[in-house]
Image (cartoon, rainbow, N blue to C red; front, side, top):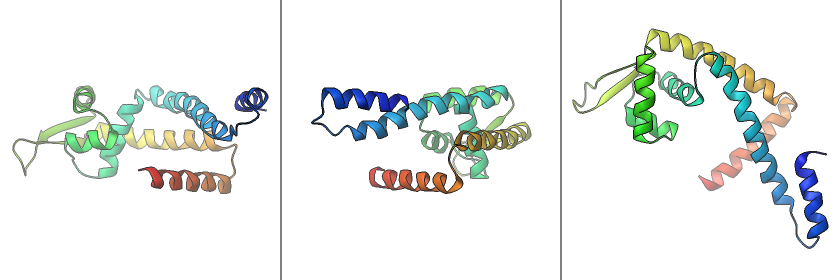
Length: 158
């Protein structure tokens, strides 16, 4: 019996007329997200990265070419000011570089430096191994089923 089962049992006692099963789904997803967030951040911190910094470097790596700060903050779901602060910090650490865009003199392009490339390549391997370990209680088939159910829910809402 997990924590959410206990809550559901209490609701069943107090309000047997209600179907509280949605609380079971949302309560578990919330607890999982909270627990996993802490465990996902830990190995990144050991590499000297915050979760947001990892996201910025990973976005640049996935893009495979320099991108604008606007493209970065839209992908990372950060405000423009928050992205500027992250880029300042990453640039100060020598992980990214900003240069004028060849297409638009008013715009900048952001790219990974060699050090940024090396760090994100190492961080992705560590990150994926950690995420796989977090999913280990589920079989590969169950992980696929869970991913498909979440995809279906997201497609209906996004």
